[in-house]
Structure formats: C-alpha cells, structure tokens
Length: 340
Image 1 (cartoon, rainbow, N blue to C red):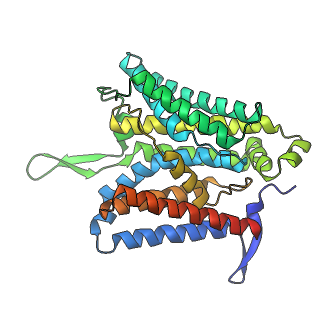
Image 2 (cartoon, one colour; image 1 turned 180 degrees about the horizontal axis):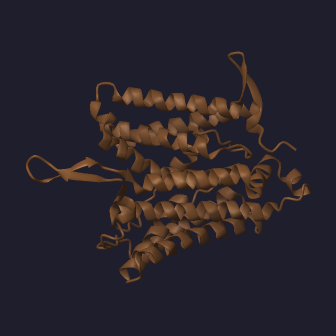
Image 3 (cartoon, rainbow, N blue to C red; image 1 turned 120 degrees about the horizontal axis):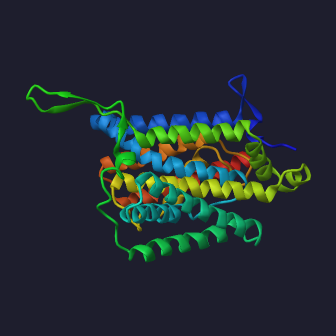
C-alpha cells in the first residue's frame, strides 16, 4: 500500500527529487516572485511594519490551513472553519464579558471549535454523509448560532488582557527618543506568529512521526486498504475533523483578540483561503497528499497576495476574483500531478 504518494521521485536537472519537494520549490518561487513584484516601486511593502502585518494576517490563514490540510489528506473537506472561527471567538468573548478569566474563556472557545469538528466527524463517519454536505450544514449552524447568541452585534470592551494574545509581541524593545518620548526600537515578534510556528511544528511532527499521522495519510491514500491493514478509519477521520475544528477555534481566538472585540460576522469566506493555502502548498483534494510546510508556503502566498493588492489599492471585489483564479489554477495543477 502506498501511503505517501507525494514522495515519488521525479527527475529534475539530472537529480531525482520528490514531486512534493518540486511542488514546494515552485510554490516558494511563486512566493518570492510575488514579494519582488509588490516591492517593485513600493519600498513600504518591504518595511518592518508591513512585514509584521503580513505575519499577523497569515497567522489566521495558516492555523485554518493546517486544520484543513489534515482533513484534505484524509480525503475530506471542511467548509465550516470560517463559521466555527466566528462561533468560537464569540463564545470566548461572551465568557470573558461574563467575568470568566481570559485564559479559561479562550479555552472554552477552542473547546467549542473542537466540538463542532467532532460533530462534523460523526456526521461524516456514522451518518455516511459526504464531507461537503456535512460541513456545509455545520457552516450554516455555527454562523447562525454565533449571530443568535450575540444578537448579530459585536461584543466590545473585553479588556486589555483579552487583546494580549493578538496584539502582544516577544522581544519588543522600547527606548527613549531624542525628544524624550518613548520610541519603538524593535516591534518584537507577534504572538500569533509564534503560535503559528509552534502549531505548525507540532502538527508536522505528528503527521510524520506519530502513528495517527501515518493513519491519516493511509486513510486518504486508500481507505479500504487502510482498513484492511488495521487502521481505524472512522476514528482517524474523526480525529482529523476535531483537530480542524480546534484549530479553527484557536484562529478565532487570535483574530478576536487582535480586534479586542468578538465579531459574529468575522470569518466569512475564510474557508476558501484555508483550502487555497493547503492546495497551493501541495495538498491533493483526492486525499493522501499534503504537508504542513507546504501549507505554510501557501498561506504566505495568500497573505502576501492580499497585502500587496491592498497596498496597490485594488478593491476587495477584484481581490476575490484574483484569489478565485489562484484556487482554480492550484486545483488544476493538482489534477495534472495526480494524472502523472
């Protein structure tokens, strides 16, 4: 049984490298090309401040993309992550507003995300409903619940502690300027970026070094062969959806913390960014192929593309059109790779 088909070697410039590595190289090349294109004639794009902005924007896409990758590798899809993000963030906001300590309130939000993922997994594995329909239903349920419990109104005045995760940074250095006023010497590394790296390393290690990771690849490569090999396919799928929901909840906490306001309308269409990040990074919608490192490259491509278009004054509607073309081309490349 072939578990990781993306490791098949292909010749390149006289050297055999894996198709997965080749795809990552092409994605990296695309990322560098985008950076070069947007920085041409716009020095502000390469500024430290804008770089930190890209990191903050990519942290949410990256967290969603990692969870989406786990589901896609099993051969499924999760269309509910954007709505689960909103529901988890609003639950955390309501909890903090009610006087619950911030860490516990945030933990409750992540737990709600994991619960939504568990429901997705149960519907897919026990009710045998296709992932597209099951997660589409959860997308509507989670969004409707978030709007209902908040009255479709944002939850504000959550306090400075709630915004620490989304707006704080490590190694921030502040000195005194010549005018006697505080001056930022180094803005520091944003906490969301650090969190993204920690999650990416942990999930990447799990996929490559732990049995659950091998089971996820086996399930997506050939479900029946995996079952005959002793893999508990349903439990593996359930675990993937739970982790996707939990990471969507974590992304919701990060986003709401950045805003210091719980917004039930946040996360609309974020599932498309997550799918795009995973597919651009090499994940196959057919299942069995995908890596966290590839998804991170894909997330940064989406983040840089959106940031560059914003700085160029391109409207949000045109941005949607461009991202749509990117998704179509990424899926097309995936299909060509699968045929080969």
